[in-house]
Length: 491
Image (tube, rainbow, N blue to C red; front, side, top):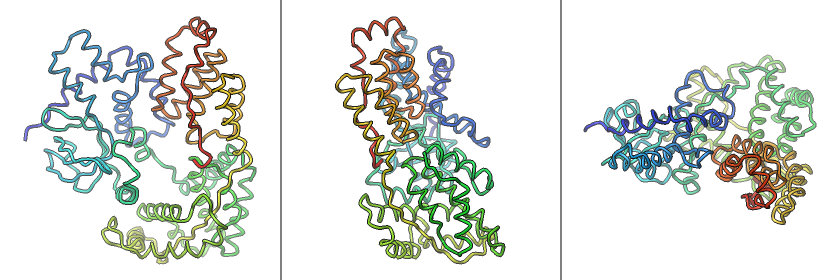
Protein backbone atom coordinates (compact mmCIF):
# COMPACT_ATOMS: atom_id res chain seq x y z
CA UNK A 1 0.00 0.00 0.00
CA UNK A 2 1.40 3.43 -0.95
CA UNK A 3 2.13 6.01 1.73
CA UNK A 4 -0.28 8.88 2.28
CA UNK A 5 0.69 12.21 0.72
CA UNK A 6 -1.43 14.21 3.15
CA UNK A 7 1.68 15.36 5.03
CA UNK A 8 2.74 17.49 2.04
CA UNK A 9 -0.43 19.54 2.40
CA UNK A 10 0.02 19.87 6.17
CA UNK A 11 3.62 21.03 5.72
CA UNK A 12 2.54 23.75 3.29
CA UNK A 13 -0.17 24.98 5.67
CA UNK A 14 2.13 24.99 8.71
CA UNK A 15 4.85 26.83 6.79
CA UNK A 16 2.33 29.52 5.85
CA UNK A 17 1.12 29.80 9.47
CA UNK A 18 4.69 30.26 10.77
CA UNK A 19 5.23 33.25 8.48
CA UNK A 20 1.79 34.85 8.32
CA UNK A 21 1.91 37.87 10.63
CA UNK A 22 -1.69 37.77 11.85
CA UNK A 23 -1.25 34.15 12.96
CA UNK A 24 2.18 34.64 14.53
CA UNK A 25 0.92 37.62 16.53
CA UNK A 26 -1.61 35.47 18.39
CA UNK A 27 0.60 32.49 19.19
CA UNK A 28 1.98 34.03 22.40
CA UNK A 29 -1.41 34.84 24.02
CA UNK A 30 -2.66 31.44 22.86
CA UNK A 31 0.22 29.76 24.72
CA UNK A 32 -0.80 31.55 27.91
CA UNK A 33 -4.38 30.35 27.43
CA UNK A 34 -3.50 26.75 26.65
CA UNK A 35 -0.94 25.99 29.34
CA UNK A 36 -2.20 26.60 32.86
CA UNK A 37 1.38 26.36 34.11
CA UNK A 38 4.02 26.39 31.32
CA UNK A 39 6.76 25.83 33.92
CA UNK A 40 5.47 22.28 34.44
CA UNK A 41 5.90 21.14 30.83
CA UNK A 42 7.75 17.82 31.27
CA UNK A 43 11.37 17.85 30.15
CA UNK A 44 10.99 14.36 28.70
CA UNK A 45 8.17 15.25 26.32
CA UNK A 46 8.23 18.95 25.38
CA UNK A 47 7.84 18.12 21.70
CA UNK A 48 4.69 16.12 22.38
CA UNK A 49 2.87 18.70 24.51
CA UNK A 50 3.88 21.60 22.27
CA UNK A 51 2.65 19.51 19.33
CA UNK A 52 -0.73 19.16 21.05
CA UNK A 53 -0.78 22.93 21.53
CA UNK A 54 0.12 23.57 17.90
CA UNK A 55 -2.66 21.26 16.71
CA UNK A 56 -5.22 23.09 18.87
CA UNK A 57 -3.96 26.52 17.84
CA UNK A 58 -4.01 25.80 14.11
CA UNK A 59 -7.23 23.80 13.94
CA UNK A 60 -9.51 24.89 16.81
CA UNK A 61 -8.61 28.29 18.25
CA UNK A 62 -10.29 31.17 16.49
CA UNK A 63 -8.00 34.13 15.97
CA UNK A 64 -9.28 37.11 17.91
CA UNK A 65 -8.78 39.60 15.09
CA UNK A 66 -10.92 37.73 12.54
CA UNK A 67 -12.80 34.96 14.39
CA UNK A 68 -11.39 32.33 12.03
CA UNK A 69 -9.09 29.43 12.88
CA UNK A 70 -5.69 29.59 11.14
CA UNK A 71 -6.81 26.83 8.77
CA UNK A 72 -10.00 28.74 7.91
CA UNK A 73 -7.93 31.91 7.37
CA UNK A 74 -5.49 29.98 5.16
CA UNK A 75 -8.37 28.76 2.99
CA UNK A 76 -10.02 32.19 2.82
CA UNK A 77 -6.71 33.94 2.00
CA UNK A 78 -5.84 31.54 -0.80
CA UNK A 79 -9.35 31.64 -2.22
CA UNK A 80 -9.06 35.44 -2.42
CA UNK A 81 -5.51 35.56 -3.77
CA UNK A 82 -5.93 32.52 -6.04
CA UNK A 83 -2.45 31.22 -5.25
CA UNK A 84 -3.60 27.62 -5.03
CA UNK A 85 -5.30 25.52 -7.65
CA UNK A 86 -8.89 24.52 -6.94
CA UNK A 87 -8.09 20.78 -6.41
CA UNK A 88 -5.57 21.75 -3.69
CA UNK A 89 -8.01 24.14 -2.04
CA UNK A 90 -10.58 21.36 -2.07
CA UNK A 91 -8.18 19.19 -0.04
CA UNK A 92 -7.91 21.86 2.67
CA UNK A 93 -11.67 22.35 2.74
CA UNK A 94 -12.01 18.60 3.30
CA UNK A 95 -9.47 18.79 6.13
CA UNK A 96 -11.54 21.53 7.74
CA UNK A 97 -14.85 19.72 7.26
CA UNK A 98 -13.84 16.18 8.27
CA UNK A 99 -11.19 16.59 10.98
CA UNK A 100 -11.84 14.61 14.16
CA UNK A 101 -9.82 14.98 17.33
CA UNK A 102 -10.15 12.54 20.20
CA UNK A 103 -9.27 9.20 21.69
CA UNK A 104 -9.13 6.27 19.31
CA UNK A 105 -8.72 2.55 19.99
CA UNK A 106 -6.54 0.49 17.66
CA UNK A 107 -8.86 -2.19 16.27
CA UNK A 108 -6.31 -3.59 13.82
CA UNK A 109 -2.85 -2.64 12.60
CA UNK A 110 -0.38 -3.44 9.87
CA UNK A 111 2.95 -2.07 11.20
CA UNK A 112 4.50 0.46 8.86
CA UNK A 113 1.37 0.73 6.74
CA UNK A 114 -1.99 1.43 8.35
CA UNK A 115 -4.13 1.35 11.48
CA UNK A 116 -7.86 0.86 11.90
CA UNK A 117 -8.82 3.43 14.56
CA UNK A 118 -12.20 3.53 16.27
CA UNK A 119 -13.26 6.89 17.70
CA UNK A 120 -14.20 6.29 21.32
CA UNK A 121 -16.60 5.57 22.73
CA UNK A 122 -19.18 5.24 19.98
CA UNK A 123 -17.61 6.24 16.68
CA UNK A 124 -16.99 4.39 13.46
CA UNK A 125 -13.70 2.72 12.55
CA UNK A 126 -11.51 4.55 10.03
CA UNK A 127 -8.50 3.12 8.22
CA UNK A 128 -5.61 5.54 8.65
CA UNK A 129 -2.62 5.27 6.36
CA UNK A 130 0.32 5.92 8.67
CA UNK A 131 3.85 4.54 8.30
CA UNK A 132 5.52 5.83 11.46
CA UNK A 133 2.69 5.88 14.00
CA UNK A 134 1.66 2.31 13.23
CA UNK A 135 5.08 0.88 14.07
CA UNK A 136 4.84 0.64 17.86
CA UNK A 137 1.14 0.12 18.59
CA UNK A 138 -0.86 -3.01 19.16
CA UNK A 139 -4.51 -3.95 19.04
CA UNK A 140 -6.49 -2.63 21.98
CA UNK A 141 -4.15 0.26 22.74
CA UNK A 142 -5.40 3.84 22.81
CA UNK A 143 -4.29 6.69 20.61
CA UNK A 144 -4.81 10.45 20.88
CA UNK A 145 -4.90 11.95 17.41
CA UNK A 146 -6.60 14.17 14.89
CA UNK A 147 -7.54 12.42 11.67
CA UNK A 148 -8.79 13.88 8.39
CA UNK A 149 -10.26 12.45 5.20
CA UNK A 150 -7.78 12.50 2.31
CA UNK A 151 -8.38 11.02 -1.13
CA UNK A 152 -9.57 7.42 -0.55
CA UNK A 153 -8.40 7.03 3.06
CA UNK A 154 -7.89 8.81 6.37
CA UNK A 155 -4.66 10.46 7.48
CA UNK A 156 -3.26 12.06 10.63
CA UNK A 157 -2.88 15.81 10.86
CA UNK A 158 0.48 15.51 12.58
CA UNK A 159 -0.23 15.28 16.31
CA UNK A 160 -0.56 11.69 17.49
CA UNK A 161 0.40 10.01 20.73
CA UNK A 162 -0.21 6.70 22.37
CA UNK A 163 -1.60 6.96 25.88
CA UNK A 164 0.76 5.90 28.66
CA UNK A 165 0.47 2.18 29.47
CA UNK A 166 -0.92 2.90 32.93
CA UNK A 167 -3.82 4.80 31.37
CA UNK A 168 -5.14 1.79 29.45
CA UNK A 169 -7.04 0.32 32.39
CA UNK A 170 -8.69 3.65 33.16
CA UNK A 171 -9.71 4.07 29.53
CA UNK A 172 -11.17 0.55 29.30
CA UNK A 173 -12.98 1.06 32.57
CA UNK A 174 -14.29 4.52 31.74
CA UNK A 175 -15.63 3.52 28.34
CA UNK A 176 -17.25 0.32 29.62
CA UNK A 177 -18.90 2.11 32.56
CA UNK A 178 -19.65 5.54 31.15
CA UNK A 179 -19.77 5.05 27.40
CA UNK A 180 -23.45 5.93 27.18
CA UNK A 181 -22.76 9.28 28.87
CA UNK A 182 -19.88 10.16 26.57
CA UNK A 183 -19.75 11.10 22.92
CA UNK A 184 -17.02 10.70 20.33
CA UNK A 185 -15.21 13.94 19.61
CA UNK A 186 -16.03 15.55 22.96
CA UNK A 187 -12.36 15.54 24.01
CA UNK A 188 -10.34 18.69 23.27
CA UNK A 189 -6.55 18.99 22.85
CA UNK A 190 -6.34 20.83 26.17
CA UNK A 191 -8.14 17.95 27.89
CA UNK A 192 -5.40 15.49 26.91
CA UNK A 193 -2.68 17.45 28.70
CA UNK A 194 -3.70 15.63 31.89
CA UNK A 195 -2.24 12.44 30.43
CA UNK A 196 1.18 13.94 29.79
CA UNK A 197 1.73 16.81 32.21
CA UNK A 198 3.63 15.68 35.32
CA UNK A 199 1.57 15.01 38.42
CA UNK A 200 3.11 15.83 41.77
CA UNK A 201 4.09 12.80 43.83
CA UNK A 202 3.55 14.44 47.18
CA UNK A 203 5.10 11.67 49.24
CA UNK A 204 8.32 12.06 47.27
CA UNK A 205 8.11 15.85 47.52
CA UNK A 206 8.35 15.58 51.30
CA UNK A 207 6.33 16.69 54.28
CA UNK A 208 7.38 20.37 54.17
CA UNK A 209 6.11 20.74 50.59
CA UNK A 210 2.91 18.91 51.52
CA UNK A 211 2.29 21.25 54.44
CA UNK A 212 2.91 24.35 52.31
CA UNK A 213 0.65 23.26 49.44
CA UNK A 214 -2.15 22.14 51.75
CA UNK A 215 -1.97 25.44 53.66
CA UNK A 216 -2.26 27.31 50.35
CA UNK A 217 -5.41 25.41 49.35
CA UNK A 218 -7.02 25.87 52.76
CA UNK A 219 -6.32 29.60 52.71
CA UNK A 220 -7.64 30.01 49.14
CA UNK A 221 -10.80 28.06 50.04
CA UNK A 222 -11.40 30.17 53.14
CA UNK A 223 -11.12 27.21 55.54
CA UNK A 224 -9.86 28.39 58.92
CA UNK A 225 -8.16 25.13 59.96
CA UNK A 226 -4.38 25.13 60.37
CA UNK A 227 -2.28 22.37 58.83
CA UNK A 228 -0.57 21.90 62.21
CA UNK A 229 -3.95 21.01 63.76
CA UNK A 230 -4.67 18.51 60.99
CA UNK A 231 -1.25 16.92 61.41
CA UNK A 232 -1.70 16.71 65.16
CA UNK A 233 -5.08 15.02 64.66
CA UNK A 234 -3.51 12.53 62.24
CA UNK A 235 -0.78 11.67 64.74
CA UNK A 236 -3.43 11.10 67.42
CA UNK A 237 -5.18 8.70 65.04
CA UNK A 238 -1.92 6.83 64.44
CA UNK A 239 -1.36 6.52 68.20
CA UNK A 240 -4.82 4.93 68.57
CA UNK A 241 -4.25 2.64 65.55
CA UNK A 242 -7.31 4.33 64.03
CA UNK A 243 -7.96 4.28 60.29
CA UNK A 244 -9.36 7.82 60.09
CA UNK A 245 -8.70 11.26 61.53
CA UNK A 246 -11.85 13.31 62.27
CA UNK A 247 -10.30 16.61 61.22
CA UNK A 248 -9.35 15.18 57.82
CA UNK A 249 -12.99 14.29 57.22
CA UNK A 250 -14.03 17.77 58.34
CA UNK A 251 -11.64 19.45 55.88
CA UNK A 252 -12.91 17.28 53.03
CA UNK A 253 -16.48 18.23 53.90
CA UNK A 254 -15.68 21.95 53.87
CA UNK A 255 -13.67 22.02 50.64
CA UNK A 256 -15.59 23.41 47.64
CA UNK A 257 -16.42 21.26 44.62
CA UNK A 258 -13.48 22.20 42.40
CA UNK A 259 -10.06 20.94 41.37
CA UNK A 260 -8.64 21.77 44.81
CA UNK A 261 -10.85 19.08 46.36
CA UNK A 262 -9.03 16.32 44.49
CA UNK A 263 -5.58 17.83 45.07
CA UNK A 264 -6.29 18.32 48.78
CA UNK A 265 -7.34 14.67 49.03
CA UNK A 266 -3.94 13.62 47.69
CA UNK A 267 -2.16 15.97 50.08
CA UNK A 268 -4.09 14.69 53.09
CA UNK A 269 -3.30 11.10 52.09
CA UNK A 270 0.38 12.01 51.72
CA UNK A 271 0.37 13.71 55.13
CA UNK A 272 -1.14 10.55 56.63
CA UNK A 273 1.45 8.26 55.04
CA UNK A 274 4.44 10.51 55.71
CA UNK A 275 3.68 10.57 59.44
CA UNK A 276 3.24 6.80 59.78
CA UNK A 277 6.96 5.81 60.02
CA UNK A 278 7.59 8.46 62.69
CA UNK A 279 4.58 7.36 64.75
CA UNK A 280 5.18 3.64 64.27
CA UNK A 281 8.85 2.83 63.38
CA UNK A 282 7.99 -0.86 63.17
CA UNK A 283 6.17 -0.33 59.86
CA UNK A 284 8.13 -1.43 56.79
CA UNK A 285 8.29 1.73 54.59
CA UNK A 286 8.09 -0.44 51.47
CA UNK A 287 4.44 -1.14 52.27
CA UNK A 288 3.64 2.52 51.59
CA UNK A 289 4.81 2.30 47.97
CA UNK A 290 1.90 1.89 45.56
CA UNK A 291 2.31 1.11 41.87
CA UNK A 292 0.26 2.58 39.00
CA UNK A 293 -2.13 -0.38 38.86
CA UNK A 294 -3.01 -0.11 42.55
CA UNK A 295 -3.40 3.67 42.31
CA UNK A 296 -5.70 3.34 39.30
CA UNK A 297 -7.75 0.64 40.97
CA UNK A 298 -8.08 2.79 44.08
CA UNK A 299 -9.34 5.62 41.89
CA UNK A 300 -11.81 3.28 40.20
CA UNK A 301 -13.03 1.95 43.54
CA UNK A 302 -13.63 5.50 44.76
CA UNK A 303 -15.67 6.23 41.64
CA UNK A 304 -17.71 3.09 42.25
CA UNK A 305 -18.47 4.22 45.80
CA UNK A 306 -19.36 7.73 44.66
CA UNK A 307 -21.73 6.47 41.96
CA UNK A 308 -23.45 4.08 44.34
CA UNK A 309 -23.57 6.01 47.60
CA UNK A 310 -22.90 9.72 47.13
CA UNK A 311 -26.35 10.96 46.23
CA UNK A 312 -27.58 14.50 46.76
CA UNK A 313 -29.86 13.47 49.62
CA UNK A 314 -27.24 11.40 51.41
CA UNK A 315 -28.40 10.07 54.78
CA UNK A 316 -26.19 10.06 57.85
CA UNK A 317 -22.78 8.85 56.54
CA UNK A 318 -22.46 6.36 59.40
CA UNK A 319 -25.65 4.60 58.30
CA UNK A 320 -24.20 3.63 54.92
CA UNK A 321 -20.75 2.61 56.17
CA UNK A 322 -21.54 -1.17 56.42
CA UNK A 323 -22.96 -1.14 52.89
CA UNK A 324 -19.86 0.65 51.60
CA UNK A 325 -17.56 -1.92 53.20
CA UNK A 326 -19.58 -4.75 51.66
CA UNK A 327 -19.50 -3.12 48.23
CA UNK A 328 -15.71 -2.63 48.39
CA UNK A 329 -15.19 -6.26 49.44
CA UNK A 330 -17.40 -7.47 46.58
CA UNK A 331 -15.56 -5.23 44.12
CA UNK A 332 -12.13 -6.54 45.22
CA UNK A 333 -13.16 -10.14 44.47
CA UNK A 334 -14.93 -9.57 41.14
CA UNK A 335 -12.91 -10.51 38.00
CA UNK A 336 -12.60 -7.67 35.49
CA UNK A 337 -12.10 -8.04 31.76
CA UNK A 338 -9.92 -4.89 31.83
CA UNK A 339 -7.55 -6.85 34.10
CA UNK A 340 -7.51 -9.86 31.76
CA UNK A 341 -9.91 -11.71 34.03
CA UNK A 342 -8.03 -11.07 37.28
CA UNK A 343 -9.72 -9.62 40.33
CA UNK A 344 -8.50 -6.24 41.65
CA UNK A 345 -7.04 -8.07 44.67
CA UNK A 346 -5.02 -10.39 42.43
CA UNK A 347 -3.78 -7.54 40.23
CA UNK A 348 -2.70 -5.48 43.26
CA UNK A 349 -0.83 -8.35 44.90
CA UNK A 350 0.88 -9.20 41.62
CA UNK A 351 2.11 -5.63 41.24
CA UNK A 352 3.21 -5.36 44.88
CA UNK A 353 5.31 -8.51 44.50
CA UNK A 354 7.01 -7.04 41.42
CA UNK A 355 7.74 -3.81 43.35
CA UNK A 356 9.13 -5.57 46.41
CA UNK A 357 6.22 -4.48 48.60
CA UNK A 358 5.75 -7.32 51.15
CA UNK A 359 2.24 -6.25 52.24
CA UNK A 360 -0.26 -9.00 51.52
CA UNK A 361 -3.35 -7.44 53.05
CA UNK A 362 -5.55 -5.68 50.50
CA UNK A 363 -8.29 -3.50 51.87
CA UNK A 364 -9.46 0.08 51.54
CA UNK A 365 -11.06 2.22 54.21
CA UNK A 366 -13.53 4.55 52.55
CA UNK A 367 -14.97 7.48 54.43
CA UNK A 368 -18.31 8.93 53.30
CA UNK A 369 -18.79 12.58 54.11
CA UNK A 370 -21.91 14.50 53.28
CA UNK A 371 -20.95 17.75 51.56
CA UNK A 372 -23.24 20.60 52.43
CA UNK A 373 -22.98 24.13 51.13
CA UNK A 374 -21.15 26.51 53.43
CA UNK A 375 -22.62 29.89 54.25
CA UNK A 376 -20.01 31.40 51.94
CA UNK A 377 -21.19 29.24 49.03
CA UNK A 378 -24.86 29.92 49.71
CA UNK A 379 -24.16 33.65 49.62
CA UNK A 380 -22.25 33.24 46.35
CA UNK A 381 -25.16 31.57 44.56
CA UNK A 382 -27.51 34.25 45.84
CA UNK A 383 -25.24 36.92 44.34
CA UNK A 384 -25.13 34.99 41.06
CA UNK A 385 -28.90 35.09 40.78
CA UNK A 386 -28.92 38.79 41.62
CA UNK A 387 -26.28 39.46 38.96
CA UNK A 388 -28.23 37.57 36.31
CA UNK A 389 -31.44 39.48 37.11
CA UNK A 390 -29.59 42.81 37.06
CA UNK A 391 -28.08 42.12 33.62
CA UNK A 392 -31.46 41.15 32.23
CA UNK A 393 -32.86 44.42 33.59
CA UNK A 394 -29.95 46.43 32.18
CA UNK A 395 -28.73 47.48 35.64
CA UNK A 396 -24.99 47.14 35.00
CA UNK A 397 -23.84 48.67 38.30
CA UNK A 398 -25.88 46.22 40.39
CA UNK A 399 -24.85 43.31 38.15
CA UNK A 400 -21.18 44.23 38.55
CA UNK A 401 -21.43 44.41 42.36
CA UNK A 402 -23.27 41.08 42.54
CA UNK A 403 -20.88 39.23 40.23
CA UNK A 404 -17.85 40.63 42.06
CA UNK A 405 -19.27 39.40 45.37
CA UNK A 406 -19.95 35.97 43.82
CA UNK A 407 -16.48 35.72 42.32
CA UNK A 408 -14.71 36.40 45.61
CA UNK A 409 -16.58 33.36 46.98
CA UNK A 410 -16.32 31.05 43.96
CA UNK A 411 -12.76 31.69 42.83
CA UNK A 412 -11.43 28.43 41.39
CA UNK A 413 -14.86 26.95 40.54
CA UNK A 414 -14.73 24.73 37.39
CA UNK A 415 -17.30 27.00 35.72
CA UNK A 416 -15.65 30.19 36.89
CA UNK A 417 -14.77 31.21 33.33
CA UNK A 418 -18.47 31.89 32.69
CA UNK A 419 -18.62 34.15 35.73
CA UNK A 420 -15.58 36.06 34.45
CA UNK A 421 -17.32 36.42 31.09
CA UNK A 422 -20.37 37.91 32.78
CA UNK A 423 -18.16 40.28 34.77
CA UNK A 424 -16.71 41.43 31.44
CA UNK A 425 -20.23 42.14 30.13
CA UNK A 426 -21.04 44.19 33.22
CA UNK A 427 -17.79 46.18 32.91
CA UNK A 428 -18.49 46.87 29.22
CA UNK A 429 -22.01 48.04 30.06
CA UNK A 430 -20.45 50.36 32.66
CA UNK A 431 -18.11 51.78 30.00
CA UNK A 432 -14.85 50.27 31.30
CA UNK A 433 -13.28 48.77 28.17
CA UNK A 434 -9.91 47.86 29.74
CA UNK A 435 -11.47 46.06 32.70
CA UNK A 436 -13.80 44.17 30.35
CA UNK A 437 -10.82 43.10 28.22
CA UNK A 438 -8.97 41.97 31.37
CA UNK A 439 -11.93 39.81 32.46
CA UNK A 440 -12.32 38.27 28.99
CA UNK A 441 -8.63 37.35 28.79
CA UNK A 442 -8.81 35.81 32.27
CA UNK A 443 -11.89 33.85 31.19
CA UNK A 444 -10.08 32.48 28.13
CA UNK A 445 -7.05 31.57 30.20
CA UNK A 446 -9.36 29.53 32.41
CA UNK A 447 -11.14 27.96 29.40
CA UNK A 448 -9.57 28.66 25.98
CA UNK A 449 -12.46 27.03 24.09
CA UNK A 450 -15.08 29.37 25.63
CA UNK A 451 -16.48 30.83 22.43
CA UNK A 452 -18.71 33.51 24.01
CA UNK A 453 -15.65 35.15 25.58
CA UNK A 454 -13.70 34.77 22.33
CA UNK A 455 -16.44 36.55 20.35
CA UNK A 456 -16.77 39.34 22.92
CA UNK A 457 -12.99 39.80 22.98
CA UNK A 458 -13.02 40.17 19.19
CA UNK A 459 -15.85 42.69 19.49
CA UNK A 460 -13.99 44.91 22.00
CA UNK A 461 -10.54 44.64 20.44
CA UNK A 462 -11.92 45.58 17.02
CA UNK A 463 -12.86 49.02 18.41
CA UNK A 464 -10.62 51.92 19.30
CA UNK A 465 -11.20 53.45 22.76
CA UNK A 466 -13.01 56.32 21.03
CA UNK A 467 -15.29 53.95 19.10
CA UNK A 468 -15.96 52.03 22.30
CA UNK A 469 -16.94 55.24 24.13
CA UNK A 470 -19.29 56.19 21.31
CA UNK A 471 -20.91 52.75 21.27
CA UNK A 472 -21.26 52.87 25.04
CA UNK A 473 -23.13 56.17 24.89
CA UNK A 474 -25.50 54.54 22.37
CA UNK A 475 -26.20 51.64 24.77
CA UNK A 476 -24.63 49.12 22.38
CA UNK A 477 -23.04 46.91 25.06
CA UNK A 478 -26.35 45.84 26.48
CA UNK A 479 -26.38 43.50 23.46
CA UNK A 480 -23.20 41.64 24.42
CA UNK A 481 -23.70 37.99 25.16
CA UNK A 482 -23.85 36.91 28.75
CA UNK A 483 -24.32 33.38 30.00
CA UNK A 484 -27.36 32.47 32.02
CA UNK A 485 -26.16 28.99 33.05
CA UNK A 486 -23.88 30.27 35.80
CA UNK A 487 -22.16 27.78 38.15
CA UNK A 488 -24.48 25.18 39.65
CA UNK A 489 -24.38 24.72 43.44
CA UNK A 490 -24.14 20.98 42.81
CA UNK A 491 -21.41 21.36 40.18
